[in-house]
Image (cartoon, rainbow, N blue to C red):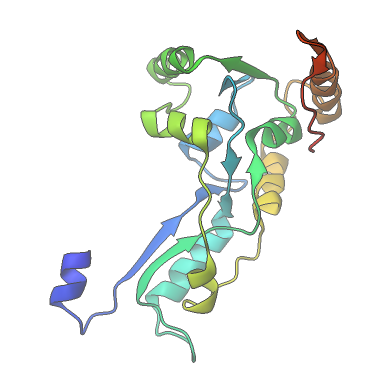
Length: 198
């Protein structure tokens, strides 16, 4: 794209880089992951995630493909995501799905297994996302493209959960169990850090 944009300055090139797309009808590797009855996670990591709603994706594609509105420009590269972030642990609680923390090598093996069984796409990129997360700056999306998503990251995830139905456990039960585990003493006399997040 960059080469084309340099060779053809007369053509407006709009590159949209989307955060993970979710919503009631979303069919993506991350949506499949969140649909598993138990969520495998990478031990010691609680990645920060950002989402964009499927309706916002359609709207920003419409904006990017038409003449720009006054005081905006639809040429350039834009990160597209809803406001805010959620931790993977918060997502699991809101879904009512228990997590199983595994060492990175075990997650890689489990990913190969569920991919082979056709349950979800557990690619190396997906494993990196579930280890380190991904959060992007969206200033250019607002200031240059002139687009503000209708849904925040949290609202996008809430709409996704509403479309999927409850998990194995009510979210409150998962939250209480996680809090009890976090309150257990750790060798050395301290407690695990607690993070009550819904």
